[in-house]
Length: 443
Image 1 (cartoon, rainbow, N blue to C red):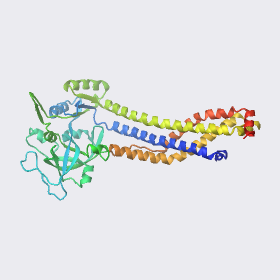
Image 2 (cartoon, one colour):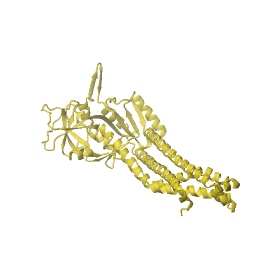
Image 3 (cartoon, rainbow, N blue to C red):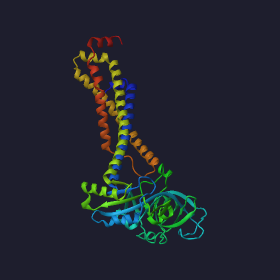
Image 4 (tube, helix red, strand yellow):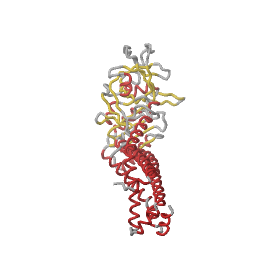
């Protein structure tokens, strides 16, 4: 039950309740985002794709002889259980009009490749060798760069025949395409799409063999860079992007990739073996970066920690500000109630009782503020979640809202309110009886 005395100065107390409500709502919203970041970090840690990754130091592919180097590592059955070379590039895909007839062709054909009414989409192309990638697939999900790519459908050709033919034949024209692009353009498996060169000319056709579902693609910031992801045979992507062979003066480079993913044998995952294998790979691939799963998880958690510290810092600052505002209002209230407090002292009410009364009033106002801020806090977390998903263009959930989180935030609020109520409480017990009665007489 709310004491009647709190209604006598209702405007001032309403301001206090409003300040607490705003503080509580903001802290609750930011706390839900922090909890969401924790969850995302945990999921990303669990989905780290491999034990070791050999990667280029720059964006440009610099791992040479990717196919043969991967097979050599795979043949080292003492150390490695799975090996997967990858080439990742940004490029343009062409979607033909719905009413157009399929126009399949390979980059070796001499036929005219200009197609009318084609729609263009900037996407991320990933080249891989299907049979090697299968060692990293679990429950129809391929893990690449801490991202889970869930697939419906797979390549018919599990090898990489174009590489086996010395990049002179063996074209499969198979592709797996992101579900966002499929839905947007009304595509289904069996339809054709086209790879476009930087001049917008179709270089080859691809038949869709399956669909990729990923949490990375969507609207917002990421859609300004790429609209989706496509998986191709490694050699075919190399050929289309000129990474199958490069000649620079006296230097010839061939079969280029960005990264090689490796999974270790169960008996070789201890710290000592991992350190030895890392040093071995650094010697085998000079000038390239070799990172462990633990290092990638650490970097991910480090980035999340920075965001958490920022959000909690803003939230706690707001909470403390609200508690101090309440303390200021209580001090003003005590100054106005000097005479009333003096009379309470005169009739024998103890200092302790008066102190607890002031503390109780602060708690009641804080409780009312928390109840008032509960719904704004929930809707605030939903708004921030939608804003972040829109900004980064991902399907991830950035907000985790639960009653445990509400109770924890409420306990933090009460802690700061209790601390901030100490001074007003002591101020109420230090009022001199004679001066207080005089204050009441001359009002």
